[in-house]
Image (cartoon, rainbow, N blue to C red; front, top):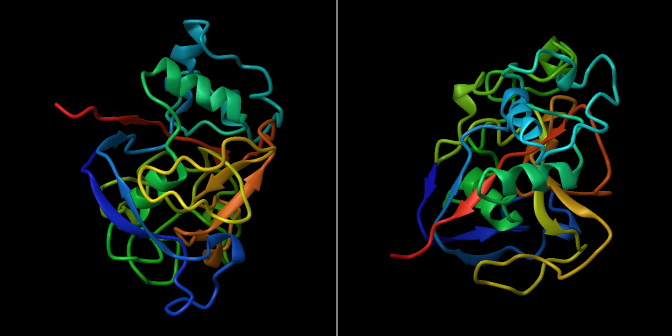
Length: 236
């Protein structure tokens, strides 16, 4: 997907929203250069090509023998889970890009109208996203769904599963307070935890807000954690 250069309000506006966490405040204007981002989360089949080229490792991808999607056939179109930060970053580098910055990710998820969820303000349900509801985790499936299974939940720029299905690694180190960068922010220069965005198939609806942030050890693996890649577009 091609995302044009532009500005948006990043973070949670505590005048409009009632669930703002301290690490999402204050809401601030951010300007980004043009970039590209995957329409959907990286799949098992895509990662297998990188592994075949010996640019990606497979260590830990079967840490859960039942629910890690790498256990399935290697041409599987399921999104890849159970992947560490370093493995995700290595795949994106092999593919010619990088993990999206936190700001890039949030702009794709929200657009420019400060919406709470990729689809707008409607309370999340299984027609929007793969989440935990009255049917159970994963809308009753108890695992992630193949990409693009929820077209009603598409983001303003056309990205799928920005809320639910798998939480996603982004490039930034985590800080409990946002940096003051206003142009192409990349977050703190160092840290011990990375940022995770988007909520997953085990998440309840309220945790799918596009401004919600999580901190995770870079070596963490989870059955509801994956990634997508981005690439900056150089000016002509």
